[in-house]
Amino acid sequence: MSLLAEVTGSLGSIGYGLAAIGPGIGVGIIFGQGVQAIARQPEAYGVIRQNMILGFALTEALALIGFVAPFVYGK
Amino acid sequence: MSGSALLASDASCHLNSGCGFPAPDATIFNYDTLVEFDIAGLTFHITKPMILLWIAVAVVVVFFVLAFRKAVIVPRGIQNIGEYGYLFVRDGIARDTIGKQGDQFVPLLFSFFFFVWVLNFMSIVPFAQFPVTSRFAIPLAFAVLVYLLWVPLGVKRQGAGAFFKGMTMPPDVPKAMYVLLIPIEILSNFIVRPFTHSVRLFANMFAGHMLIVTFSVATWYLLSPSVIGILGSAASFTVTVGLTAFEMLIQALQAYVFTLLAAVYINDAVNAH
Image (cartoon, rainbow over all chains, first blue to last red; front, side):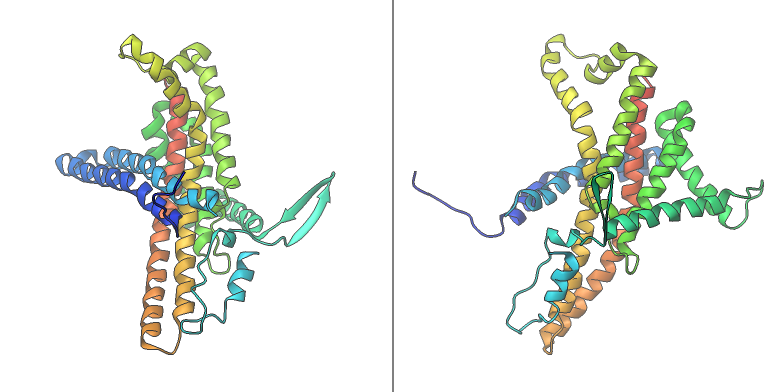
């Protein structure tokens, strides 16, 4: 099979960049909506903050797996 | 090669001295064995992270023994800090997440929160400067401990049938969807859960330490007799200081998130869906 296109260099960095797109949008939505929820209902601050951090942690895990994967599978 | 040896070999490497930027890689997390001994045919290697782990245990135990040794109704001094920490875990994590039955898990969650926090905090303590939780075995052991707690606990409290039904079959879903949902729920609730629980803590500490080391190495590498070298070095140093402050926030946040997720998992076992 002939090679049509090839990418060389620091592929781990490119992989991390791609892995960070989705979680980046997700974390933005979580905190944006969280701040909005707190502004609408300041008395529910405690519950909203806890759920906000929980959602942030679950989303952020995807980006972090993307960060660690090149170290594990790279070289 | 161990981390310290790697950095030492590049100590004379500066900008314009003909060598490239010695970017740190994953080997900075490997330490040489300091002490080695055999017990019952097993060889034990004591490394720096191991010693930091023992120090962290001692710090947490000594601090809270001092705080609560002579507990009085109206707290003074160190007891105030201890009680504040206890109330944070009890009200902010255990009761908010698990509800009425949360109080019985406070000792576990309390220990997790402060132990993980101190382990993370080792990252910015001078001379320690290594987050112990960035060795994957340590968060993995914590996550497996939580997993071995909540799965048998759910079976015991709710009965095996009700527990596994609650965990794998979300209610109010068309019957045909269960063909798709049950495998997904089994995968996400019972197989991937301890993995993501530990990777979240590990990867955060790994990434944070990597960032600080990269900018510290850059500060040293750019330090050279040229305008761009001095400016770059100063900028890198500023970033290092800023990142250290940022890491303090992340360390506390990750300890909180780890404990909060442990509480969420225990809640799945204790309270039926």
